[in-house]
Image (cartoon, rainbow, N blue to C red; front, side, top):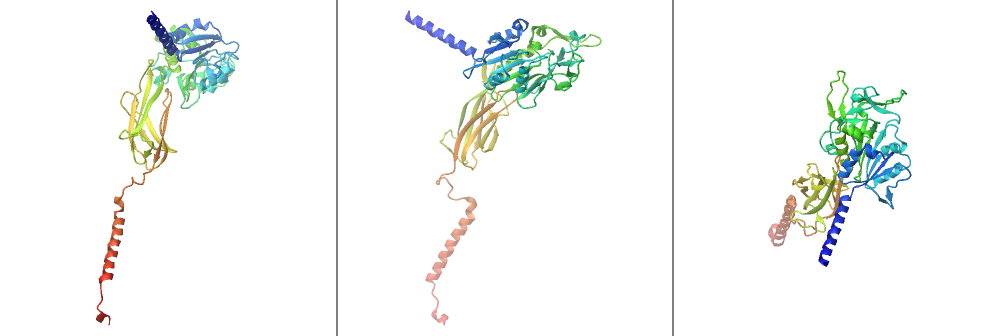
Length: 433
């Protein structure tokens, strides 16, 4: 009986530990202006709960803490509150990102100052508060008699397919505000307006036309250096059930434009997978370096042959698998790189190379600094001292010095011959007279 109770207790503990491991990275806070968003955006939230996320909904009222005693309370933040003012401040959200938290932010026309400050802090400058993205050519047929603010967008990011899972979604419906995305290696314009779009007001008042054509960013993303990820959407309606389930039909004069299901659901789900680090997540392990013979000395010697290897893995469908790439490089650095070598991989995530230590001694660094758009950055650093040759490791005779050796020995031979002649040669005295 005691053995059975012990087995049950062990199984219960294992179940608790397993559930804790599954919940790791899944604590997600949803802040909304109106909690009815649980019904209007139910398909999107259901996709998250089906993937194991623990969603906690809070109305944008009072103060909502994101950290407690310096530790993050949540792993992810979904900020679907375009009118938020004091529930959280921009500095609190940016501190949450600096601590490694992921943020999915949705703005809208008339976004509050807090939302604008957060977007600006991650490299997205929202358009004028009263403006909307307008497109008189690429708009949905349902907005024929309106201001053409329900637009159809299909300008997806191309050079970073990992963000959208590598497959191009169907055209996306968008209604909201544009953004000017910072040009940089960490910021991406995930979805852009067409060349005929512009940001303007619909109330008849003049507004500066600062964002024109494809410069109108609709959805942007940030891959921070600490691994945190942020996505900024100019439309909260983009994630709604209405836009997920509707049919998209571009306006045409003859009314014969093809009707297709909107790509909003696929776009939103794939974007959330990237933002919440389900995809594009890299890690490294098993860094090894030794002499060519496999010996790991306390310090290397100049001109010694070294073997270096590292294992890099990518998270795919919740499992860590070997990452495959042909552009992972190793730098052997002391102030400046003495070697920069492209590593060879075996197809299972192990990268390795062989090289010779330069004829310079000091403290060197093995550095793999891998930064690719859409992937978490990798910086693997290992240090090792390099010493000069010992007194008994130098070559006794250097081939390039053979002429000097010959000169030295010829002088010795000449001295010997001269000494023999001087000592044993006697002149005839009669000849001296």
